[in-house]
Length: 80
Image 1: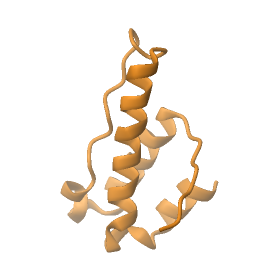
Image 2 (image 1 turned 120 degrees about the vertical axis):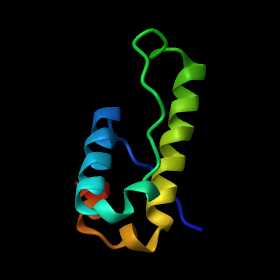
Image 3 (image 1 turned 60 degrees about the vertical axis):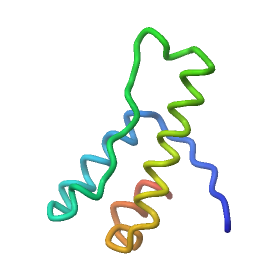
Image 4 (image 1 turned 30 degrees about the vertical axis):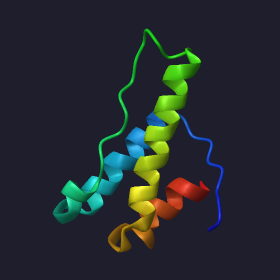
């Protein structure tokens, strides 16, 4: 498959998740939770890697779901 390198702040993922659940209320259960935030560990490499993997999982789930994959909300998030 192909790869995309996405550079977004956690808050942008949070906003995207909120927009997605608002746009697809019947599919709210299909939108995974984001990995947790932490004010204490936010600069520790192990924590950051775990969070990056969680965000990658979140985005993969969204992109592989046919309900979301063609949505303007997803395109705005990826290409804005």
